[in-house]
Image 1: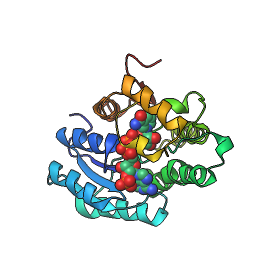
Image 2: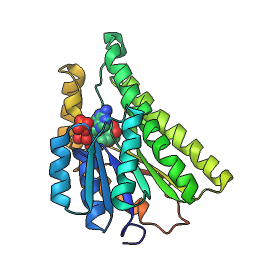
Image 3: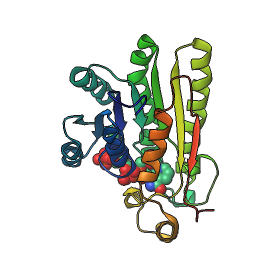
Length: 245
Ligand code: NDP
């Protein structure tokens, strides 16, 4: 497929859910994929399913050095990096009055700093080669505010504001770097495992039972964005179930 065949994609959070499915869909369309996450055995399985066009490294987006190692792996194995999907994230929802400050900071480390570590590791390559595509997984929670998920909403609004500001800088600087923000609605993955048993978890689980889509809905959205002609920037994509308000 145009702009995907033989292109090298780094995908964070590729050990399950949306990241795993996106890696498989991109690889099916001729891409080479470099998989990042902390659960090595899961990465190994995903890479084995894809075959020779996949490689992986146990890595933590919260650790900047770890993300530099992923870029080094992409270059040594496949010779370059064309695009990145900054997808890794967690959603340990709770009300702020519960003061689960450790969870708040965890979301900031992974959903915000993790995305920034991912971008800062690939940006020197993209600037030098005057091309590249940064795809970031925000959420519908990055477009509105809901109870029980204040910090998560904050992190997803952050990546939205950051990447769209960066897009305008890239235009100014003429670097040809494309950006895409994906805003998924409810998707059936392991994400809800990060919520502790609580009223919040029960409400979210019920909601997901009724409306959640399979991860291929998002993988196909990523494929759409990255396969556009080089002069087309699909900046924002909201993808949700026909049953989700
Ligand atoms: P999953 O829990 O299935 O996947 C999350 C992925 O992130 C896993 O591969 C996990 O791997 C990885 N991850 C978590 N922490 C780290 C870390 N510190 N370093 C590296 N990788 C990490 O859920 P989803 O697929 O749903 O989530 C993917 C993204 O989609 C998230 O950013 C989420 O916010 C977003 N999203 C999801 C929605 C949904 O309804 N599912 C809706 C909107 C957005 P490991 O644990 O092996 O490190």
